[in-house]
Amino acid sequence: AQSVTQLGSHVSVSEGALVLLRCNYSSSVPPYLFWYVQYPNQGLQLLLKYTSAATLVKGINGFEAEFKKSETSFHLTKPSAHMSDAAEYFCAVSEGNTGKLIFGQGTTLQVKP
Amino acid sequence: EAQVTQNPRYLITVTGKKLTVTCSQNMNHEYMSWYRQDPGLGLRQIYYSMNVEVTDKGDVPEGYKVSRKEKRNFPLILESPSPNQTSLYFCASSKVQGAVNQPQHFGDGTRLSIL
Image 1 (spheres, each protein chain N blue to C red):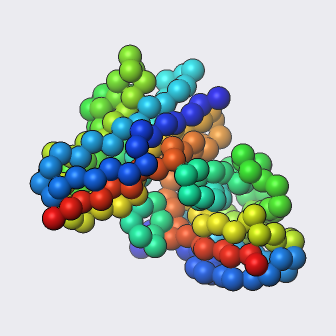
Image 2: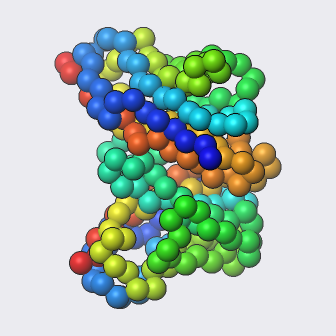
């Protein structure tokens, strides 16, 4: 069965610093991977997705993620954190042909002034 | 505006009192799904539907029912709610072609408290 592990339930960075949120997956087939962001009292919004077209995926709000098959990783980065980036971030892998998303536990990003 | 609409957004109720959470999407999506979100567990799928009259269990279906009589609507039914169903619920939809790589659109969530 596929699974997703997000390392670190809480990450704190200073405004302007690099953001790195870690995600590792397990999958027996080429995966489809996603990063979603959840702002307080809102639903999940798609940041970016990997569908095997390119290993470096650019998303919205300046985020990007790199698919590394050898490391089974799909870490999310942003060069310079902004206060508005404070939210919870979820990594997910799509399973089989059902379209089901398997989510990681989530990482809360805190941005300090 | 493309959206997934859930109602109610908040509900406090008591054990055993049947309730329904509605979900409607205006994007003509074939695929719809319900998830529950619990601290430290991320989101877990309850039920999903690939099209009208086609539904199937996800990972945590116990205590829930769904129906898909129309393409746009996918209500979640708790026949006899219990306190362990207190959670934050999300409905999502996507196109079904290549469902595995189509991003899902999420509603804003329904926070249920079962006393």
